[in-house]
Image (cartoon, rainbow, N blue to C red; front, side):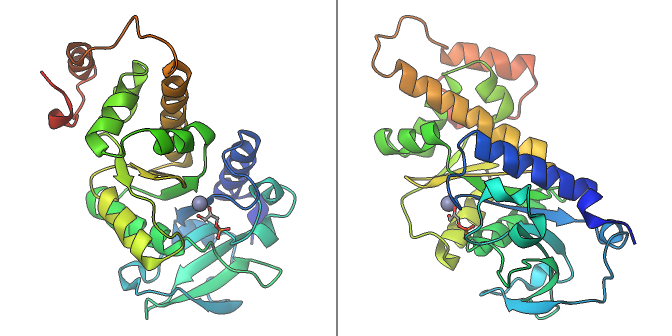
Length: 271
Ligand code: 13P
Ligand code: ZN
């Protein structure tokens, strides 16, 4: 059996949590990440028949029965993952009943997975239905995105257009736009269901005055979406107090969709 701390998926998780903490995206225990693992890959590091303990998931995730996830722990700080992965992370497998998670590694202090597990697992189900290669759901609290959700009309078309017009790369990175939820109580099945519904259309979902959800086939892809939205939100706020002199027009955005063959959200442009 190989040392799990050397596994590429573990190293990826450690690198991203550490980086996101340093960027200020995850204060205190803010943020959570889940990464769907390949059973054959996990078998190189863990005995698949050894279950440390079981933890209720709080909802029916039967569609994901047998699926294995590396998930950040609830109440745990991203900055501490690097020094103590086995306490701050866990590897769980969804049991055949769909309402139990089998702990296979981690949460060494008796802890458990993120309180946002419903939003993560429901979003995994939603993304798998539109992209079977999706593996990552990532949530964090980046400053400028949060600030923007407090001062901008929280309408998907309006928010997307503002983000697209801040910089050329925005529409290239998220041509389908961004999903938006009003302020809701976090850590509930309700916000999980609402997030997952949006994830059928969008790879980015903004939670008003809370944070952002991104997804992807890889950690880089999910993180790349989030950092691009965050940069565009930062530019929006930097420009907000100054008179606008130069703009990216709807015709310019359309030209980008042609140049990069983008499957973009047509009704979000005025042409
Ligand atoms: P957890 O510590 O349970 O992951 O919660 C952090 C968070 O960001 C809640 O939305
Ligand atoms: Zn949060």
